[in-house]
Image 1: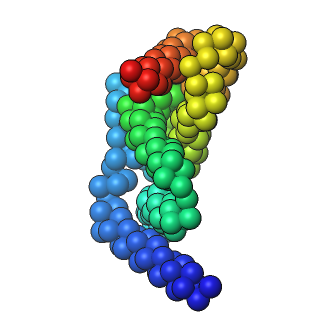
Image 2: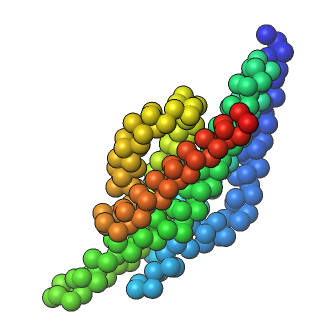
Length: 240
């Protein structure tokens, strides 16, 4: 038990050092990181974005929240890695390989969701919500948008968590494919259920726009079919 205590203590110290070092690095590059978060708003050609602040300490609080947010993201992956490394000696080889596959797949979908979020979903959401200003400009009511920096960051972080959470749902497909193996009847039976689930998720993630919902649903369905094809191909290759 003492050896386990020492190992847990050492891993906790490593995680603490990782979090603190990431915190310091993010603070050193805080302007660059803030620019990366603001960059999706620059894709909008219909509006000229400029950000305001109404509190003397608001910019400092925005930097602090951004630094904590990014440091926690890095800490989460290191925490999962240390948990996997800690329990590795008590696992069978196939269990260790299976958990490693899940961990690597989770990282892949995290990067994929981050790319989709910054390049597609978040700019589309900004265009949709700000389009109401263009509609009112043709009427007697004139509205002008001034983005508050702290509220923009809150919206960005909230939308980020929603997008990454739904993209991580694809890890469940690994367990599903392992369960059904190559049973095509079960694949056909659950296909409609997953299609409905993807449409529901796209409705929650994307703005209430039919075109964006359809595009996102098609992307999810395409990834689902690709995973089925790869899974069946690998199993057939192993049998041959």
